[in-house]
Every structure is written in C-alpha cells, then in structure tokens.
Picture (cartoon, one colour):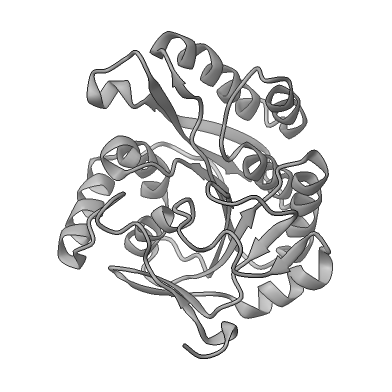
Length: 277
C-alpha cells in the first residue's frame, strides 16, 4: 500500500455514477461536452459550480460548465466538495499523490497542499471524506476530457459552518494568487421535494449566485430557505473567487431530476454556473 503520501485514491463510484469502462466513459463524457451549448463568457473563468449526481441525471448540466474549459490550459483545479458519508470538523485535503478514474490518474498538487495547510489551520491532510465520497470523483472525468492534463487539490468540507466556509475561502484566495488555478464547487441543490417546491428553492440559490453574494447564500442555507448539499463549499469558492478577481457569476443551466425521469413528485435540483473575472 505504501505511505499515505504515496497512495492513489481509487475510483469508488465507477459503474454507478458513470461507466466504469474507460472507452465507454470517454465516449459518454465526450458526447455530453459536444452537446453542451457554448455560452458567451466575457473574461477569465475563475470558478465553476457543478453538480455531482450520476451522469444520466446531471451530466448535461455539468457539461454546460465544463464545455467552456475545452481548449484552455488550466494548470491546477481546486475542487471543494461536501462530505456525504462522514462528519468531521474542518476541511480534509487528500494526503496522497493522486485520484484515479477509468480515464487515468489525476495528480495532486503537493506544493499547493502544503501552502494551504500552512495558511489555514482549518485544513488537515487526512483520508477523512475521501473514501466512498463521490462529490470530487464525478468532476474528474469532465476535467480529464475538457483539459487533458491538470493537477488537483481535492478538498472535502466535513463541517459546513460559516466560520469554516469563509475561512477556507479566504485562505484559498490568498494562496492561489497568480497561480491561474480554477476553483470548482461541487454541489447539488434541493433534495426530494416536488418539482414545484424545488423550483422555488433552487431559484433562490440561483439568485444569490447571480448577485455574487456568498454572505446571502450562507444566510439562506442557515435559515433553511434553500438546500444545497455543497452549499458551504460553494460559499467558500465564491469567497475565494472574489479575492482572485472574479467580478460576476453567471448561471448557465438549471434543472432537476424530474426532467430526466418524468417523476416530479420527488426531485433533486442541479445547476451549473461560472464566476468570471
């Protein structure tokens, strides 16, 4: 197995959230990216907000964002995700050397990891949150197809408190200055409401994003006005993006699972957005 620093985190949801076969997955993601419209974006993409459900449900939405990265060079991608399987305090950065998908391995930027650990006591190098968690993994095939070669800094937020989310965002905004890194917030929206209720709740999230207002988004999450399993990671990414020069946020696509399944009695909401500087 080697030391933790030598470990590659294996795929955990291949064959469930997306195809576990390399050729099939390559074709599937390629088709999703090919089918996504090219949104006019004026400026540099500083951050991306993308869903993390199975590709049959949210893949088209994710492709609206990732399609904008095709043909660009992004040396590093910082992915901030929630923890669905275990609760822990603070933020966990993967201590190993890479994440694997059926399309290959994506190396961890160990220099950025060390800088973040030194800058932010809320972050710990640990395997917590990186085991069966899907919220980072499902972003990777899109990055691999859209960018080709890149490094990642995989972060899982175990406790989505205001202090942790804003503290992480401030630290990322500090260490990423001048790096050209892309931020990715991994989140779905409301869960298991009717399509009508989901639309009402998710519209509020979209409005907070369009206003580029992480404070209001956190207020709405804490008050229960909205639901977003990666709401805290999204807040952190917005805070960091603002410090890195982003001026506006644009929602590219929003939908829910009922649009795919035809069942509008209990749906999950999905959204793709970009912060542009």
